Length: 374
Image (spheres, rainbow, N blue to C red):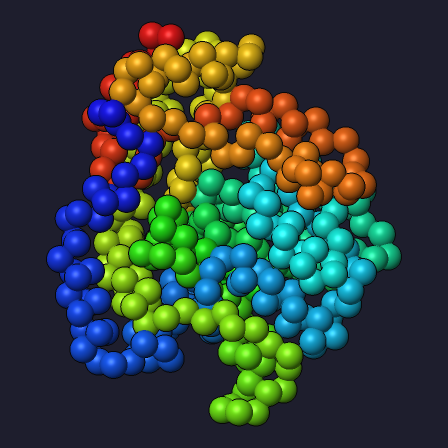
């Protein structure tokens, strides 16, 4: 395949020698958990998100689970409370909610950003809704003045699912005064899954927040519920990030912003060059810094599969994120929800195009030409 959708080996080939050196340094150190690589990574991620605290954890799902569990331990949430989530998201968003005995409330999305439609949130609020979990899907921040106003008026917790948009910047400041994703709400979960813009060589995640007490609680919960050795204040979990992954992520952080800039150039090329009448490209929002974890177009008139086959014949890989919304998955078919017309329409139209390194703007022009020739 000339243009694979994603090739992780190629994406990091230019600095593979740095990754190998960092791995060897960790092996030689004999420190495999709770070491200096993890400590430094937490400082660097906190600075990137413009927050005071970062607690690294085992993966992105656990990051969200731990935030919600910590708020339960602190009395801000209790089992049976409701959390508003977007209907168009990876299932992990809902899993974190239901795993804590909380109830997901699905909100439909905007067709332009494919993110939660903040204009609909007020209609979903009742006396059991205690939190809202915006997802910065595909690398586009989900935050606007209407969302922030709703959070303040109803005294809701705002917990960001920032699995796909680390280092993105919204076009408005959040409750902490920063526009950086991860710092927009009360807390945020980050994923370092290998396919992410900042991905480990395995799994990993982080919780970021300005709340000192929340950070301490998450750190204890993630380490068997202990605040010091052999002293367990919670019935906790084992959700720690290891030193090898922290070291890999610190190497990748040195190249991260340059790779995000290349993604932005590829996205701009797609937006300019794709002109097929059946294809709608995503919106590039002025004043916002999107990081384009995925570049997701819409193909109308039931032509998505034919378009994908056409591109495959031209050596171009594609994917679908996500073909089946969470509320149509077997495990969540019982969920009560309002009509979700935009989510359900988009599920049959969306196609993700190659955008990760080593895809270049020149490659994007070739791919756009192939799309236009469909």
